[in-house]
Image (cartoon, rainbow, N blue to C red):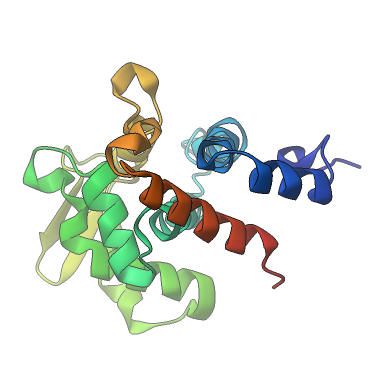
Length: 193
């Protein structure tokens, strides 16, 4: 039987005390490091086997991180939080890499995947692993290249490519902002679902 490595080695009481008693950086860096070391390894694995790509799981995983970060850093939820994450961390320089442009559609597609599965939106989203663009609209269908989407996401964690997520002090640039982010992350940590 395997344990969830993200929580291995520390009781929930000890972790909560550590988060409460230390600076906001403790919970923020713990979150980012655990996403990078555990969650992102699973997200990367979704596209490793070209004969058995797990595109929907990749999209759900990235969306989960986007909403978690946006809630904590920006106090934004839903499509507004998702768009803010894309704009801040994933958008590239060319228009086909500006995923924030289609944030509403991608967020709606995530909701279909997670909550409905059969929905007319499925006729308006497609994947093309071979196209050179990150995304493009052809007639009424938005095509996404999942490999490029994943690369843009992973780039935000990669210190060799800027690791912009780890430069959170550019956004949380006052003690008040850091403390507010800490409280938002703490509230999610303590929340019983």
